[in-house]
Image 1 (cartoon, helix red, strand yellow):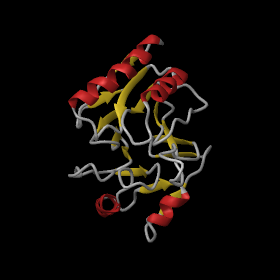
Image 2: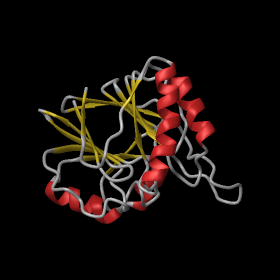
Image 3: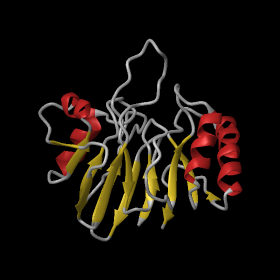
Image 4: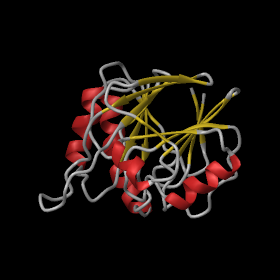
Length: 211
C-alpha cells in the first residue's frame, strides 16, 4: 500500500484495486485529480478535515465512492450519501479493510462543545486518530501522528506514541507549522518512536511511504 501525504491532514492510500482518501480538508488548497477512489473517510466535521467543496469535487470524478463518517458529518453533508460509522465498525471494500475507533474530538477548551471524532485503521496497518488520542485495540504498524493543533500538547502526543509503540510513525495534521515548528515537534515524536524500537519518517506534502 502506498501512503501519500498531502497538505495538513489529507492522506491518499493507494492499492492496485483503488484509492482511499482520509480527511480532504480546506488547508489542501489545490485538490489533486484523484481517480478510482473507492472510499473517503472523514473523521469529523471541522473544515480542515471535511471540506464540502473538496468532497463534492471528489464525488464528481468518483461518483461510486463511499463516504464514511460519524453522524455529525452526515448532517453537515446533507444531500450527499454518507455511510454512518461508529466505534467498532468494520468495513471491507475494494481490497481495503477499514476499522473505526473512538467517540469524541480532543477538548480545545471547556467552553467549546466536543464534536464526534473517529480514528481509522486501514488494512490493520495504518492508523490515523483524527483529532484524538484514541488508542486502537490492535497493534499499529504505521501511525499517522498529529503534531500541531489548538487542542494539542506535545507531552500528550508523546504519551500517545508511547502507548501505541508503532513500528513506523510519520507526522500529519501539521499544516499550521513552519519549518522551525516541524523540527521541534518532529524531534519529540522521533524520540519516543525510536525509544520503543520504531522508525520515524518525515513526509513533505506529495511524498510517499510504501508499506
